[in-house]
Image (cartoon, rainbow, N blue to C red; front, side, top):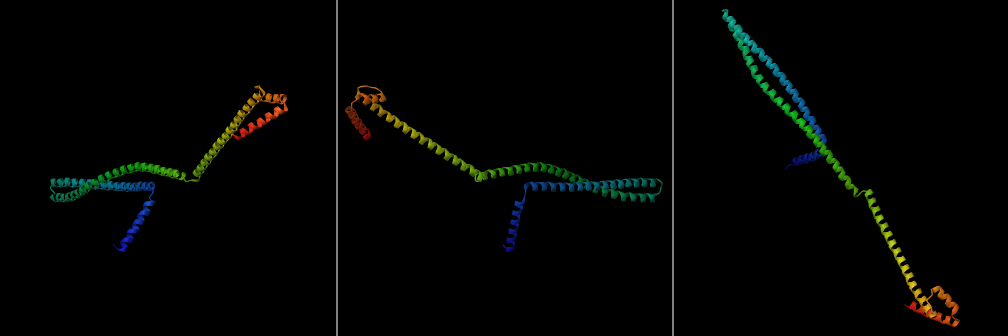
Length: 257
């Protein structure tokens, strides 16, 4: 393969690619309809010219046919009058006009066939243009729908990586983080309350047991404030010292638990 052939193929390939990329379906369809309408105008003009030619040929044929008939009648009249020379001349003229009429009749038949063919082509082209217009509208609607869908898909594709969508994702993460922190704080707060109440309940048990033991020592079962007041008023200093020593021993035992 020669260098020129290779370069020619490369140039044609690049040109075809450029043309394909530059083609807009809507514009191409519109231009196709315009071209077909121009062809229709030219075909109508051709039909009109063919019909006009046919009419002229028909007129000439009728005229020559009429003249041939007239010369036939004149030849008969001359022969009836005994003028054979004049009759011969009339027959000569009749033959010339008859031959011309025959030629014109052949042309007229050909022109009639041509006009009929052009008329059928005209009707077919008009039908094709009407069909093309309908198809053009359908294709344009499909092109518009395809472009709208392509734009929608492109927009949807950009949403996944756009800054706006990223902001929404970041805010969602932040809300989840705040909710987690709030839940953790709530759980910690609940744990502190439970431990405080547990301490109070434990302290209440010890105080109740201490009050009961004091009541046993004093021989009664009064409440803790009354027991303490009675103990301070009725016990002697030595008994009080013994109680305090025992109480201190019990406290040490409790602390050692």
